[in-house]
Length: 420
Ligand SMILES: Cc1ncc(COP(=O)(O)O)c(C=O)c1O
Figure 1 (cartoon, rainbow, N blue to C red):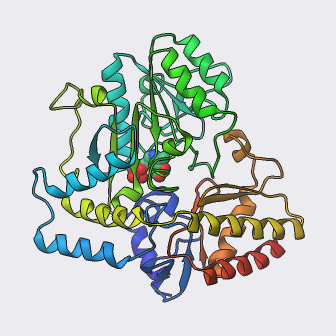
Figure 2 (spheres, protein in one colour):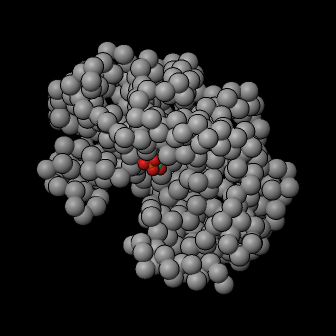
């Protein structure tokens, strides 16, 4: 099989054959060659209904004709000028007009860069050292973010990767999502020393976990009370649930916001932005350094403009309804086959946890049966359904998913759950 032959070559080139860790799964990942609408095709010509959508960005489906045409037309005009170009202004304006809290913004090349710079900016602006992040929250692969909680008695985080200096991890405090008390406790212990709280408004990197008990409002109140900044990492949620951020749905104004994924229409992108007085500290206007050769490059901007132009007139209830109906049908199958599983859904993103209890935080998510998840993933793959290959990722619905896709997915699930 061509896919296996190619993967052998990949193994000779990249660590475990991949260029990002979650893309590897045993015995070997499928090698994809094309994507059209809701489907992706592997190099052997087999078709899959895609619920990974490139880990989120492809909300319009693959090879959307208008996005492709915008990219092609920019290719003919040149793809990098190393100076401000009109495409940056167009995309920047669209984002600023759509998201209430973003008064000034800067483009980066990835979500990782966006959160790294937002954290540095928060520290530079407040003159404070500590950052609070959530247990199970993911903000990219840089040293300030690769931190997990230490043992019960420790309030400092510990590195979640080798190579992250302990000195860095000691500047990051880890709180519990959906537990405002755990956050306030950190503020009491580190009074006047916390620069910012960073959180995904809806956790999307530990499966899907919705905010509960007015948690996001509590974060806003606590950060204001202690003169600290609130950063919403909307790399996944930006423009996913409507032509806005989740913050506009929740009615909360963070001080800074990070985005990525959808705003680049599938091209590499990131963005951080927020209050004008804070953003004024970014170089060269201010003294917090941030830079990137490819930041705001015309090609990415063209893909982003074409994507957001279309999303503006989309009825998001179409993808929410698809996900809600899929959830309902899967829940009936789960009851029919008496499986210990629970589905978490936020609008058009969802995850199935093999766990009989409700999952509301990291502890609940990690108590799920990942072996069952892997079995489900592989059986679905065989049946032509592509889910992200980890219990701790998220399934996404695109505007290209059809009624037939829904039926095929439910059919595939019926046999998967029967096997389990
Ligand atoms: C919430 C969140 N923040 C940041 C990132 C990092 O983005 P990137 O992979 O573009 O560096 C991700 C990636 O999945 C993410 O989900």
